[in-house]
Length: 191
Image 1: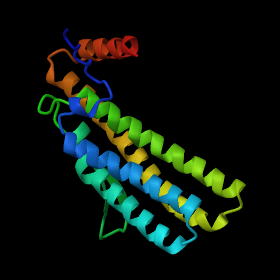
Image 2: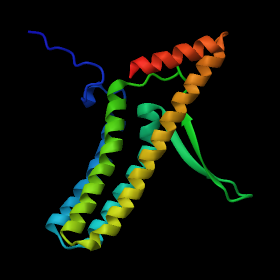
Image 3: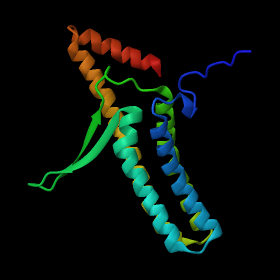
């Protein structure tokens, strides 16, 4: 009896091109939520839970921004400040088209985890308010700032990457108008 091979993009870490990166990424994401829930439900030691959760959130923020994003979906972002003017601007980096093949499983895990975690933190904020545990709200606010910042930055980075790929393919071909029209029609029908 043969076992059928799971389809590409299936949510199975075994199909990942970078399983250690994926599992570490998911571990940071889940552990910060679990430590917070453990503290909320089983202990009154707010300081210990606050410190451990903040450390896990900071590790998640750094790991996602600098390692997991680049390895799993080929995206990276950072913020630069111009020393002369003090102006801040975001810089987005994506792998060159054709140089890195993005694994559909890695991509699905990445985007689902990226968008689901802020939703959980919003739900936990509502729980803290409804149960009158306002002392937990600063921790939830910090978690929301870190997770939403990464979510927005990677969403913008992905849009920037798609726009760059679209423009690059249009200008590399001889007939720009034909390329633009075919890409626009193709994107319209692929959704």
